[in-house]
Image (cartoon, one colour):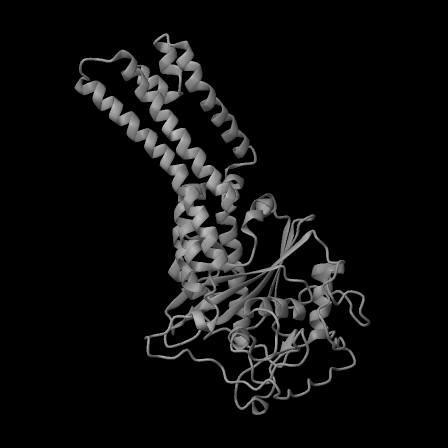
Length: 461
């Protein structure tokens, strides 16, 4: 009986036996542990879980969990040392064993999840699977293929716009991000890295800016087409007419074009430069891991705006409310044979919003360890995960979400005869500037430039 009472709360069994000093000795540390736990959970269980992405905090939780578990075991065992029975009956022994196993199990739940968070945070910070040198190859003897590009290759001039169109904006010669950038805005480049069958290097086939105004809690999602070419570099110069932006990471890793930043930072800065908003961090997501994550959370629910029927992949998604498992979601975000890259980018945004809503719920806490382990293998980021907890409240209480894909009228397809038959698209930066100021206000680098008139997104992809 004393052991069972001490299982409920350390020291209770000692008090039952009349051992008041022992009861206080066991109860006081346990009481402090309870108060510490209540304090940690005061901002919600999701906040507590995300806080463990701070490796220092995760280590603290592991130590506290191990110490308290050991303290509880000592409190449960101590009555048997006090009473000193000549033998422990089968029933008492079974109860004791059950109590000890339950105590170890409860401690292990906290310890293992904290360890999973610690490992995932460390792994996500060290992953770099988008670089061609880190991409898997079919065999050890197969060399990594890199695009062969000439940095000095000249670009064809953009066609002139009509008098009624927004004039082209000439990018500055150096990055514009200065002290005036709003600290209340957080912008992340989310890029999907696709290791497709038969491809010896990874391409960043999904390029999506996620920008959050932390004061208004409004979110803007802007997708840049993967085949964007002939674009200005933020450090000066111009991309070749046949060079696509989804190969930029591999090209920079190969020492081309002269960027002084790392490959992924270059891509993040370049996307932000074109769209007109400072990108603070990047997150690379392995597309296959993305599908596994959707399965792990039990699928996602979306409202599909348009029927998707792609016989080439056997994908049929009716319009309206749909539940997607991981495999179907991957088909949904990859399909383009019967639609377009622009429609695909719009579908990617829809699925990302649905997944974010699912992940930001307490119902996901029992799956925390598995989610973190998968994230560690599927995500690479330079985001300071120790600060992730600061954004939990905003993520759970978003006020609005704006979505736009930079397809027509923000880009156009040049005549393929000018690109050797290669399909490419080119951004119309004048149109992009109007959208940028509409979405980001004074945070946009286009803000205040002559001819820029804020305008909402003009496509439905």
